[in-house]
Image 1 (cartoon, rainbow, N blue to C red):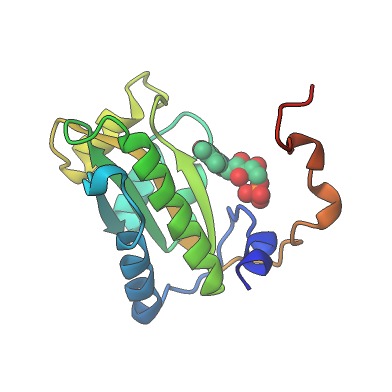
Image 2 (cartoon, rainbow, N blue to C red):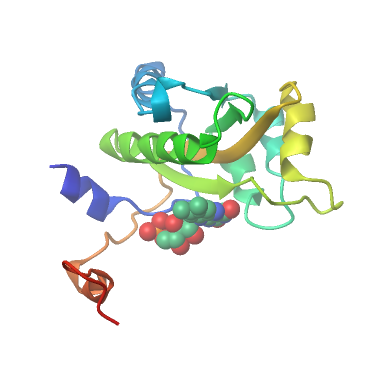
Length: 175
Ligand SMILES: Cc1cc2nc3c(=O)[nH]c(=O)nc-3n(C[C@H](O)[C@H](O)[C@H](O)COP(=O)(O)O)c2cc1C
């Protein structure tokens, strides 16, 4: 059941030394292309990276919160042509979420690395740094990198007790 997968999904930042099988990568590739897109424009593009050196370079995209990518066997860079859609952020966020949920369904761990609006340790925008590492043309913005791999250890699933039901408002907002 999808809800069970969602309870089990945790942000995984340490990975076993085991590659992601081609068959699993093929499923992830199809899944992300199934993500919905506003007005059916599909402005997103996905760069699938398995090369260790490239992953290491990408792990330096941000001053904080991206270094663990160098030990991941796979990263999927989610970017979009911002000229095609004014709501590319929403499209790219849904695509990123699809990747994480499908990764969980394949017993893979994943973690979102925020790129949009972030900088590297030199003060350069993380997007422009990644554009130059991967040869992504101007006009494309990078939303995220989703790091993927087999978890090094088990992480406790979320539990029902953690859910903040007070965030739910029925019929009208109750303050
Ligand atoms: C939009 C977004 C950006 C995030 N950026 C990062 C990041 O740059 N680095 C990181 O290590 N985790 C990042 N995370 C993971 C969150 O820290 C994590 O989802 C949160 O702490 C909840 O933990 P859980 O995913 O295990 O449920 C991001 C998550 C989201 C949704």
